[in-house]
Length: 259
Image (cartoon, rainbow, N blue to C red):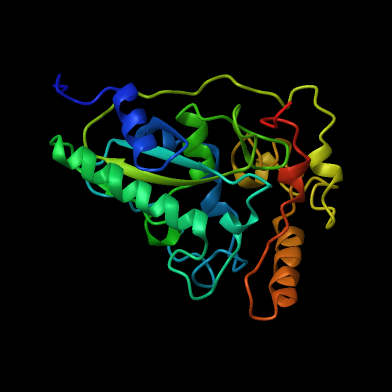
């Protein structure tokens, strides 16, 4: 039996924004388990690129979320090109970047707000192997945007210039998506031609191999190994200082820019 006293999606959105998020949406965990990334993950093989916490992603046969959770609230914080400090990686900073710290605080604040209303909520870790989830898939299901041809979440308001976190919620909440938003149809994809590594030149993934029809970069033309080489080069160039990772595919996207 569903609880009539649960906060509405509009109330949760307002609370998330009050906690520091720029966007918020709700997805059902049952839908997320059937999403493309969660379906393909066990078949993709070991990967120890930038952003993983250990070589080979641990147990790839399942995801580990809080027992009893039925919904997830996805939060986004805008990372505009004019504010590069938000995305600068500092080895000695909690959360790594200023933007991620804002997201962590927003997730904690929203979980407290929900808890005060009798709703069990748990901020999720970023990493899959620590109990996180594929945030782009979750954001699409929550109605925040679509997966773009640059393999990034593209939102109406900010384009792909956002970062994400999530809060697992025990009761089932009304989903707010998917939205049907798709600015990539017919787009000449300046995001792809902007890539200095040529990470979108060739089709890397085949639906028969990964077990899903919805592929990275939409058509499988996203080489995460090539992308990772650029990220490693960015780390080396930082010389121990803040790392400004390549974001050319983000900045080339025309969606969400001021006219």
